[in-house]
Length: 309
Ligand SMILES: NC(=O)c1ccc[n+]([C@@H]2O[C@H](COP(=O)([O-])OP(=O)(O)OC[C@H]3O[C@@H](n4cnc5c(N)ncnc54)[C@H](O)[C@@H]3O)[C@@H](O)[C@H]2O)c1
Image (cartoon, rainbow, N blue to C red; front, side, top):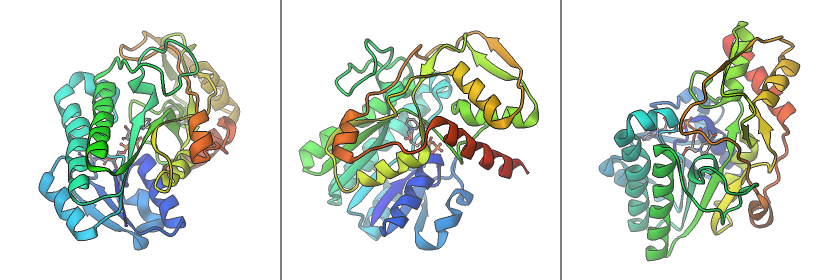
């Protein structure tokens, strides 16, 4: 049995589908604050669902007792960078203390492997060199980056003390179907939704800021793989640098909509350029992104159109 926290969310639901495809038994623990059952529609009959909060020790303990998972994939988190700046205590409670709660109970209940979803975009801070590899210093510039990094350290401390295996996956900018286009992150679904509605796209800054965009199914595959192998920290990105202006052009090409673009002031807490070196994940986890940006945007566009139809 594999326990997937945040399994009803954007990335989590794709991870659950991948695990079910691979023949694993899965229990999802989610408080459904952001995630929804609709995301799990395809696999609903094959999995168990526990509606609980990762910060609730009794509920998490009960889940470990009842399902006895041998591995945990911990994706549940508060993922909004701006919110982390406005409400740092709530962010820290969910991301840092929620991870501490989960990993300490995992240790008590003899879990063999713990996979933690971290953020390559947030934990490194402003890059000193590019592409960013796993040895790059971690100097987060947002509270979200701090709370995700604290989670990494809790995982390491318990894994080393209690002798279970762990994998930390530092995801780049993940995008694809089921990413909330009303959220603050996820520039691709946000732009696609606005294009669908004929609304202008807002860019914070000059649009030359860059990111590493990785398609959600590629991320789900490597996350499921981390249940079987790997040890330590891995960047999960494409190694490609794409600017927000490049995304605008791709959105225009895929949708055929000649969208208007509005430039506003850059937002604090965001790095200028970042893309990740995924060599380690390629060598040790067999990570090979299969979906390029154009296909990924096309598939996200199909999903958005079905959703608003
Ligand atoms: N989307 C990205 O680009 C990206 C990049 C780097 C890292 N990550 C990490 O990947 C993970 C998944 O992110 P996502 O983009 O799928 O976000 P998401 O918001 O869609 O998924 C998070 C899930 O966790 C659940 N959740 C939130 N707080 C909870 C709590 N207190 N108790 C139980 N469940 C709770 C939500 O209901 C949701 O289903 C997060 O840990 C995030 O930090 C995401």
